Each structure stands twice: as C-alpha cells, then as structure tokens.
Length: 402
Ligand SMILES: Nc1ncnc2c1ncn2[C@@H]1O[C@H](COP(=O)(O)OP(=O)(O)OP(=O)(O)O)[C@@H](O)[C@H]1O
Ligand SMILES: [Mg+2]
Image (cartoon, rainbow, N blue to C red):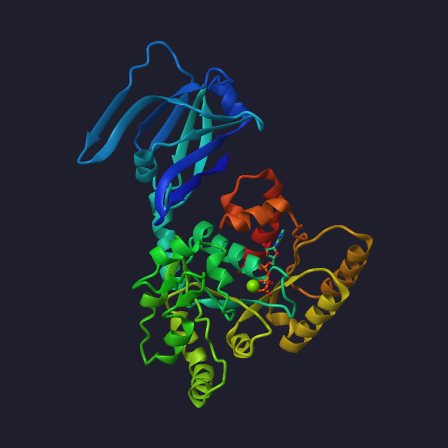
C-alpha cells in the first residue's frame, strides 16, 4: 500500500518532523498497545524495516562520509488516546536519505511480520524535477466571484498549497486585494516580516501594516527583464506570494492616475514574464476593485467559489456567460450549511452545470475546524482532522487537473 508521510516544519521552513500514521494492521504487527509502545526501527539501503521488540536486539548506527548507512534503534510510537491512533516518527537523517522531504509518500509492504517501507525512487524525483522545468510556462488561474466573503481567499490558498507542496509545482499567489489576506491567512505578520527581504513588511504601533515593495512597484518598475525575487515571500515550500501595497491607486492625484494607466499597460507583460518562472500563478480576486478587470483579462482559467444563495448563483451564471464556460475550470460551493432553501438553489445550479464540462465537486461545508485552521494560518492539507477529509477531496478534485 502507499501511505502519505506527514512533514512538519518550524519557522523558516526548516523540517523538524516526519511522521507516519499506522493502520490497525501495522499496529498489530508491531504488537503495540497503550502501555507498550516500543518497536524496532532498522534502516539499511534506503529501506526502513519496522518490527516488534525482541530480547536479542542490539542498537547500532554506522555512518560513512557523513551519510547514515545502517541504523537499528528501539523507538516509541506516539499514541492519541481519544482517537486510538498510533504514529511513528522517522528519524530526520533517515527521512532525508530516503528523500521523504521531497516526495512525502512511501510504499509499505508486510513480509513475515516485518514492515518494509520504501520511498519513491530517486529516479522519479529527478523525473518530477525535469518535468517541472520543461512544463514551466505557467498557467494563470483566477479565483473570483462578485460577492464578498464567499471563500475566494480560502479557495485560492488551498489550491495554491496543493499545487506547490503536494504536487511539487512552483506556484505564485497574488491578489488584487490590498488587505493581503492571501499572505496573512498563511503567515503571521511576524513570520511575513521574517521571510520577506529588506524589511519589506512592517507594522507600526497601531497595527497598520505597510508593504514597501509589492506587486504595484514590481509592475511599475518593470523593464524588459523583471527582478521579481526581491518581492516574493516564500510562504511554504514552492509557494511564493507577492503582497500588494495598501495605497494602490486612490486616483486622487495626477501621478496616481498615470501610475494606474501604466499599471494597466504593464501588468500583462509582467505576467507573461512571471509565467516563465512558475508552473501556476493563482490570483485571489476581489471584484470590487477596479484592477480586478484587467486581472480577468490575463487569466487562462477561472475557479468560482459560491455561497449558495439566489443572488450569488445568478451572479455566477452571469459571470460564466460573460467569460465563457470553456474558461471556467471549476465551480465550488463554499461555506455550505444544509437548509431547504440552500438545497433548492443548489438544484438550480446543478441542473445548469450538468450541461457543461465545468468541474463541480461536493460542496465544501462551513466547519468550525476550517475557521480554526484559518486562525492558525494553516491549510486543510496541514491538518490530520478526519472532519476535513471530505473538504480535502473536493479541493483535490479541482486541483489535480489544473
Ligand atoms: N468552509 C468554511 N468553513 C468555515 N469558515 C470558512 C469557510 N470558508 C471560509 N470561511 C471563513 O469565511 C470568511 C470569508 O472567507 P474568505 O476570506 O476566504 O472569503 P473572500 O471571498 O476572500 O472574502 P473577501 O471578499 O473579503 O475577500 C473567512 O473569515 C474565512 O475564515
Ligand atoms: Mg479575500
């Protein structure tokens, strides 16, 4: 069977944990219970072997040229009482040797009461890398709908995370929203400050955040070749964000007006250049802003999150008619709470979508767990809560064919 490895990072994207959850079958083979949680972990030739403890085991470790060659240790499984879950930590040195930090998937085989764990071949890792370089002529997806608070930012973030961290593509997330929720729903202000270059993000005593160099400056200062690296904040592995200055185009002075016109002119050119560095550019839209209109023009495809009420559904249908159904990648029902009225609206939507090839996953429910995740600056893929499995499935359905 194939199993997912859970990687955890501390500040600055430094790997500090590599975990595998055990199925009931694996727990039985290792003879684990609430009181006795020791087992033997052996590492050899890029394989991990797990077995139940026995009396004649001797702990061993051999290292050659700084690389771990062979390891036998007695370890203790973690146990979550309420959930009756057992999990093991894979030593980080071993995880790195097996490249689990690059592809967090393993094959698990059972041979005569020994659990054999192998990573996905290095060859595959290289192939993935090569494919990535070849493919990079990024596609632009815009998440938009004419309605505030309909989970546009939430949707943009989950999709960007899936593509970057799970699919291992290079992703850029930008927004037309000066509140920079696309950044601050993934990082605290302190983390954003730490990860940005040249104190690009600052906050004053009353909590006002200033972005020194953002998308506006990048676009306006762009020449033939853009130097975008100073502007990005790497929020997760492979997931870059460019924030947006809060004072964007108030149009109160002549200079602001000229800047606005230049921005409009230069934006498509900058996007064309950025495509070369990224596999995907995700735009978290905010349709009340003017600049949103020309963001719409550069996007290849659209994802529309919908909170089911009559006005929003009508708005979405209008939007689809305006930009054309073939440019719509997916429509996702968001923040869904079952009521008779909502289900009636959804039926109206279903019967219409059925006639198109637009991807339409199961509704994403409004959940306290999701609210909490957003508060903790985490994505649904960084949680192990079983309540989020359905939500993960909906997002995978949308993101896997992007
Ligand atoms: N499935 C969900 N369950 C619970 N809360 C959710 C869910 N999806 C989004 N939210 C919450 O709903 C609020 C609005 O979500 P979000 O910010 O993603 O919407 P938006 O469309 O980007 O809003 P805006 O128009 O202000 O940019 C946020 O507070 C978010 O935490
Ligand atoms: Mg938003």
